Amino acid sequence: MRTIQSLLLIILFSSNIFSQKVLTLDESLAIALGESYSIKSAKYNLESSSKNLEAIKLGLRTSIDLQFDLPSYQRSLVSQFNTATGNEEFYKVGNTTIEGRLFVTQPLLFSNGTVSIVGKMLGRDQFNDFSGTTRDYFSNLSIQLRQPLFVFNNQKANLERAEIRLKKTERNYNQTEREIIFNVTTKFFRLYQAKKNVEIAKNEVTQTEETYRTAVNKYKAGLIPEVESLQLEVDFATSQNELLRTEQTFAELLNEFKFLIGLELSEVIDVKADIEFSDVYVDLDEAIEHALEARAELLNSESDIELNEMNIDEIDARRTIRVDLFANYGINKNDEKFKYIFRDFQDSRSVVMSMSVPILDWGQNSRNVEAAVANYKNSVLAYNNLKESIKNEIISSYNRVNSSQKRVEVLSKTVEIAEKSYEQNLERFRSGNITSFELSQEQLRLTKAKSNSLNALIDYKIALADLERKSYLKYN
Image 1 (cartoon, rainbow, N blue to C red):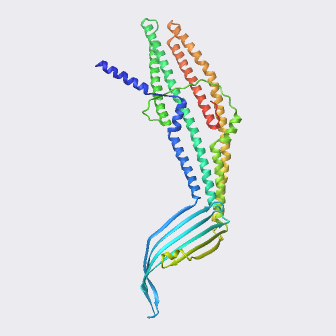
Image 2 (cartoon, rainbow, N blue to C red; image 1 turned 45 degrees about the horizontal axis):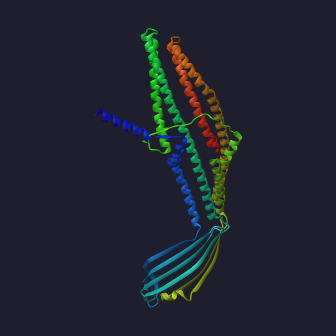
Image 3 (cartoon, rainbow, N blue to C red; image 1 turned 90 degrees about the vertical axis):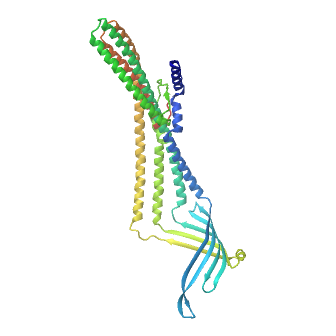
């Protein structure tokens, strides 16, 4: 029975090992750019803007609509003068109509006008107290032009706005990708840092345990006082506590990382990384110049200026002289026989030019224009402020890269020195030349050296990733 249980435990343990995913940074980025919440939300925003532009473009094509009244029934009392009695009397009148209407409409983008073909056909039964019920038919086909003059071209402006908004959304999507790359890179290196901290803590536990066991044996042999043995026991317990803390931190960061890249929290993963130091040259002027040319926020700010300019023109045009030209030409026929309404047409024509002249609105529109101008000035101010902010961001990132690079160069040497010093002092402790306190300090210095070197290297990697995100240049 115990043999079977042991086999089951071995199988279970083996399956957990083989099912574990060990992710590199590139693999993590690939998952995040396909599965994370941020990228999916950005895709939906991009799809929305794209479909909105498509809808506006399709709205500039010819549209065809049909309307039907099946039927339209009316009945009422109408007061009329009766010549026989010399009195006003009420009579029942009414009609039942079946009607169909066809509209073919073509917007004119270049002129902000509309050309329409309108077809109409109806059959009607009319009844009243005078002549009973009569039936007739009517057909009409006309072409109509509606052309506003001296006004803001709303059709063209709506198309331009939709195109600008789509470009902004595309830039936002690309910016989201860059943000995801930076966030995943940062979280990945922090997770790897936590993993290495666990390894450092385990090594410290092993070292303190070995030292503690040695001290216990020396105390039993009467070579050291009990207090030194007790001090090392405290150090051993402290290192175990630190190991538990680092393991908990790693577990929490692991779940945060899985959530960030879009994996289920039940997924069993680990990370591996090559974080060898490589010296990277950064040209500050090039980084600033490229950022000002490529940053999505700055390009979108330029688009906001353009949209606000259009808004000023549109609002200002609301209280200008407006002329509307309406022209209509049609053919129609009315007859009691259905077959006769498609021959011997009569024609109808009309041209109307109407003018609207604003006289007084108590300054309402001028205030709206002033508000739009203020919004425009604010967008220009925001653009200039953003340029300076981007320059400052690049300079700060550049300084962080240089600072962390120097830290890596300095601290990488201290680990080797601290390891050699610890080994020498461990032998001195075994031979009784130093106290347990002195050895404990050496252990502390070694652990701190390893931790500081790791932190500097991780900070350097993250600082480079941040500079790449902000400058739109590639350094790794």
